[in-house]
Image (cartoon, rainbow, N blue to C red):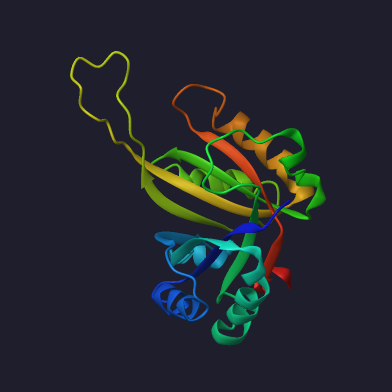
Length: 213
């Protein structure tokens, strides 16, 4: 069923272009690079105000036949097996570039995978609050990406796009941590209320990097 994946990698600032250059050697082009902040769960660094590190996040749809080569390249050329050097992972895609709904037999069962990626979209400045709440569950690291929403409120008198700034928090966790984290964030951050944010989860088929240690 699955012959495509969404490849993601979180790297230290300045590394993304090097990765994309290596991808082009394999014949892979395109992709999106977003700027983000890594969050370090370390009390001493938090006291010094150094708990955040500048990151680049790569999103690249690939054919699954390239997956082994790409993950091996990330290990050999970018040494992501070392702590704080980065991480790469893949999210399976049932169908890419089609607008039709998936039939039941085309949908992935998240329980078939050991890890999942939680995405939390909240208003600007709330990303750190998401991380504080998540760490009540355990030592979980995350990446905060800055974005913006778009839309026109129904009660707006003028047809002007309203684009409030957003924080997108990306958390890579084991299956057993997903439900406790979701319940904690929905309760503590009122994510079940309008305009407070949104949370969704995608399965992760493969992980390469220091996270595995």
